[in-house]
Length: 636
Image (cartoon, rainbow, N blue to C red; front, top):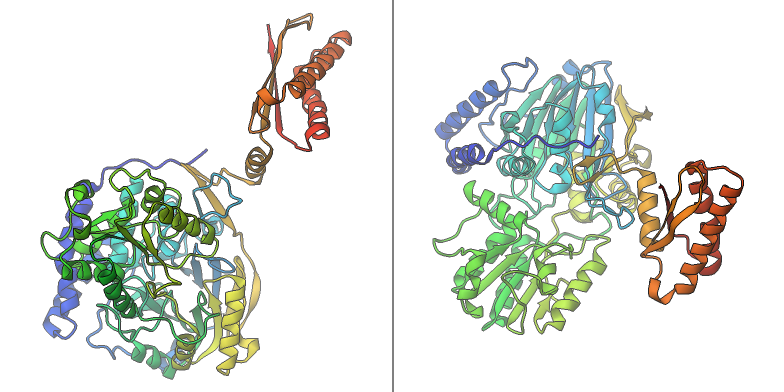
């Protein structure tokens, strides 16, 4: 049976909760150098944690760092103290040899922790599928060990599977403020009440989940509040980079906490799980602030025109730069697309997005302003068919009609597989007379993932014994392995795993120790996992060769044909241009029914199967196509 969410109205409750958290989050940001404010934040955090976890003795108690350098990671003496014969297992349930649905499981003794739970977009061959999520089957067998879900940042490929996970497992969630806000928004959309499971953590905090001590370490990415994780276990320290880059000139965040990573490296790191997405790219990734220089030049070029910018809705740094330039040029800003509107609202409430009163206007009022007074920020940078930009390109957007007065900037790089869709949208926008700027023309996008030099710096700081490439296609993992080897890590100490493989660390050594149930689960509407290989084969067949219905009525008892056969074709041939073929189908069906009548065999199942097989041969012989054939025999 498809799983359907229980609809619970959380809107007012979550809005109140977000407003209540806003002032606390802003205060926490401003208090990095204020000891007293930190103590207040620590008390509030501890009180919240104890309230949400009073019923679970192993639920984490969080501790706030007093300064950047302390408390120190496990020293060598402490590592000896906590080391044991209990092996550590790391199992990737997603994110290897693919882009998306990142999910990693850490197991040690009677404790297990999940890091991230993302989704992926369906490939072109997954017809009708909305979302792809990891397979949670193995988690059922260890559900008594699960201590919590730790989330590195708020991108869909790391949080998109959480609503489905929480349908099966009641787990506390630990994440930074913006990430918690985005997860909360997803839960509102699905109608699930999960606010009691949320635990807000700041970079620099350490949480304790069973035998795991997990510190959140600040890194840069294309969304604020991203964190790497230092996971101290009885077997040793594991550093999980999450998605990261090293940006020395971020827009409004602090730079990555390289000093903290170096401290862990000095004291010994067993393994580094490292982002591989940009591992093929030499050099360094472009700084987000550099994109602002391109925007400045493009805003000047767009004088007298309406500016429309398509970007990722989660890239809050990019949104802030766009709003800043709009204000500097005296323009109003409107946002189009549901995810864009949601993320702007959350980021504003939490203090990550700032703008002057009167800057933001509603989409319904954009036509009241002259084109040169407007900036529209929209979804659709990946050419998604139902996105706001795609609807503009097709002339189907309710408020926006593209003209020669539009200056459009696509501020994103196409995700592998989306290139054709993006090109199609660009072509349609150009045909409507607009100017279109995209990445190959100007530096209007900065990746959030580390290139080779940044990965080398991470390795030199952390100095891991084992290197474990994660988050990427197989070619990305191989490229990341080459980078690690070039930094002096022995190739035998580079772990190339697969989804479902168990990587086991014991007595300081790593190896594979079996596999677990894993794979992908297809989500189609409210149906979770009920679209399997057979359904997909039928959908592919329908999409390629179409469908033929043959309907006839026979007299119950005598088997005499009293109506039909009628032939209905959908997606196979155009009936009016194929009368001869339609007559062949009718005649052959009549012959088959008469043969059953003469032999006095009236079993419907046999008749339908014979008609399906014989018509299949006939149609393939005449058309070289194999449509799905559905005989319908009515007893009259």
